[in-house]
Image (tube, rainbow, N blue to C red; front, side, top):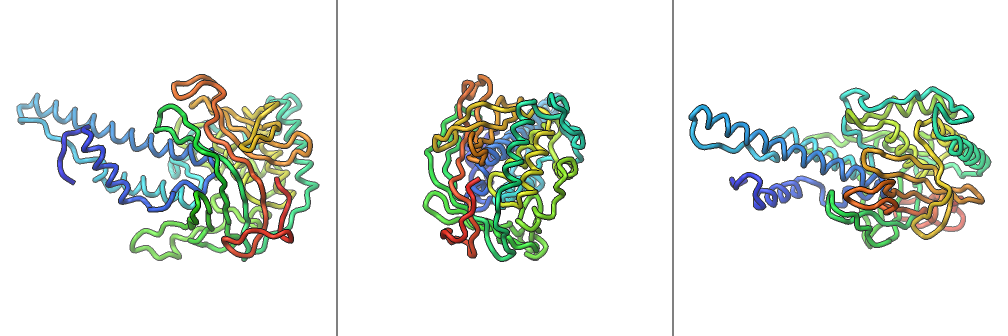
Length: 384
């Protein structure tokens, strides 16, 4: 890379071009639900910006030291993209996003964050978990889920979800601009064994394979991902404990966060991903909802609107770091799942309170036999 003045527009453009060359050519974010997709995009960009600023600080300090020692004119440190460790880390995050994995930026560094008491049961007033209203509503939702007939999904089949939504398309860290509403279809492979071909997304008029990135020189079998929280299948979900305390303990143990991040919020988000875009046994769904009632900070919102204008009650949790609130929206009559949205819970530099950051409405869930196959009436399952 040619040397250019540190911090110049040319340097930033060169770095962006280099990053674009290294990252996958497909839409690396599209597999995640809108709220999680936007969150991980922001986290990745914050890491890049933080590292870029750190390099400039190092260059400034190094130049000052050289001037003080009479070593001559300042020299600039290497461009941050030239450091293999950062390049590998950035690509790893992007590949994880492309694969639809739940990215814990602090993975491998220990628990970090603010750990809750996952084994504690909620009391009637919600002191050990969510608010009283949320606990009562989640118990009702769990009861409905437990009574719902769900067709088991075979190992060679695919879970199909059709939704409609939009996300923030404004500049990074700038004012929020909600994009155009559009339809999204996704097919998730149900193969239990480790796979690199996870599924398919149909969005913006194109089909995008969901694949695990295989680094050069790596055996694809070594890069394959088995069924688990990061690649759930019906059979794997059926193997989870249906005791809410045991399930929540497992979730907290499997969730890694960066130091200072809110672990309760991350666990809430992971459960939201599962109930929002999967098909699971009734007992498992009920356990997830009851487990959610035990997460501190979970509340109920009396009226929320999904991406297609349907009103419902919401189970929500606020991320106080960003001033946003994630809401799972349920039909007020049937208590079936409608969708999810993220709104600003307070005024910020990016948007006033009440601004929608992203929104998605589930229109259909089904079981199909092939990737890319749209469901027929025979395999259509309940919506929500």
